[in-house]
Image 1 (cartoon, rainbow, N blue to C red):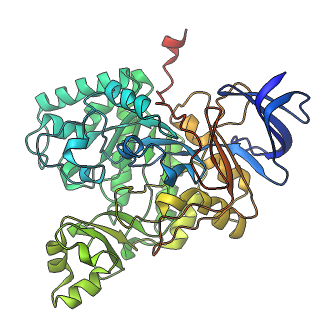
Image 2 (cartoon, one colour):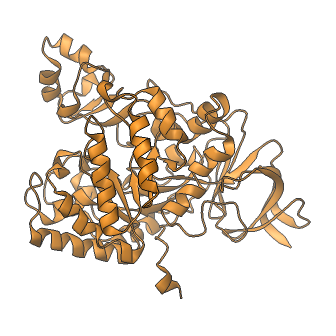
Image 3 (cartoon, rainbow, N blue to C red):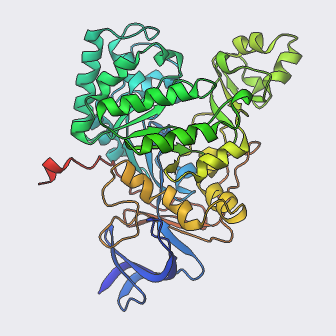
Length: 484
């Protein structure tokens, strides 16, 4: 048989969490055609994978790439890490289904400017993905804050029954067009005033469509147990899986409390389906938030509209040079972006190691000086945490960014190296794979990623150039009643 590609002598880590094995893997069209100890057929292109790992393409379950995958479809920050699929629409903010009537509210401004929000439906967003042909696949959640902004004249209050009904109708339509589920960003001021009941009402639309509920908790600081309880109650009410976004215990007074939060996860997992995602760094990144300004840890300003000249400086340095308090300096910098050194390394390790933790970068592509997680999250897990720190075996690391993620977000026939599955694959050197991106120089491709294939098209190679753009819009797997 004639194949398009044939990977010879590779170490297959198939994404299931099972043991690695040596094999040949053949590709025909957009699918994995054969896996065997030795394949007799011929291929248009053969690749010697000796001492290399062939894994499923990585799935970045937590991104804010909604508009950037369309504006910059080669999308080097992700494909250069071996990422072949991104989930957008996290933290309550999505470009899909969002309509702007004026200034873009915080934190939706992380995604882009008002004129870039031109996707009133999921179908419109999917069509834009098809036209842009990005290098990677894209699936979208629908943001709660985006829905609120469409249906409310004031985001700083609870929604009325009529407004909730409007949001529900729009969410239902979005799910019917292939959206993966609903996301919230309840910590942000634009959603903080929403009641638990408001979110529960929206969650009622999810179960019938196999949807998922993901949440940037109402608090990641001292009230985190209460915030987790709220998230799990919403999941139980809607009878849907819950994913806690970028799980962390933020703030110096909170350090060490992942022992408590993960114990709660253990208890709740016996009754309902819950999981989380995590990025492999002890610093977070977002817009500058007055509630998070403190002298307990360093805060680096990454951008500021009124004062672009201070990008890269700490808030402490800026306040001292301006002879004012941290809060007064913060007010003058707004709107702005910041990196917060607000986590404890042991907490990060505990969450990364937790069995149902997936990997998500949470990178902010529009940030002039982005957190290095935008370019480095996945190789950092493979190199630093798995190989060097031995936090978990490489098979577990790959599972957390492939098979586990595809199953959780119901992405059919992806996330595994398996015959008949889509040929989203990454070939990497386990001895050299590592993150190169740093806080001082964040826009750096990873080392050790040798080839990335998306839907059977070779899309990235050792020369660190994007060679193919075969990404697709991914819909959620339909409920069983529709599969019959």
